[in-house]
Image 1 (tube, rainbow, N blue to C red):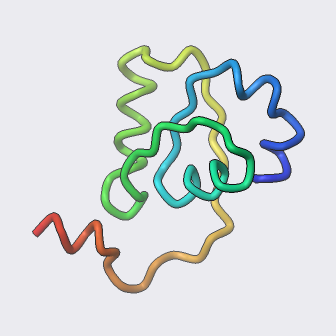
Image 2: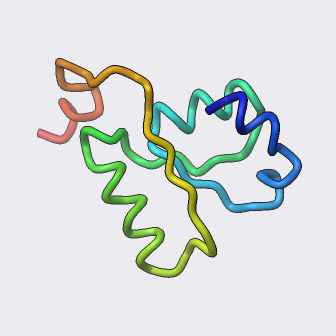
Length: 82
């Protein structure tokens, strides 16, 4: 994903970007892109992204399937919810 973002960085700099937390943080760290970070996928980030799209706050979208392994234990973010 980082390689794709680097290859398309001029286009991506002109867009309002949203991503789930782990993915967005990784891309931001490696590219310097300004990305609105949503919650992590296990605690509702995918649903937040769906809401951005459904509310017409996105003029387009591209979804990548993460190659990151699923988290076996709750994240710190999930623990703070309860």
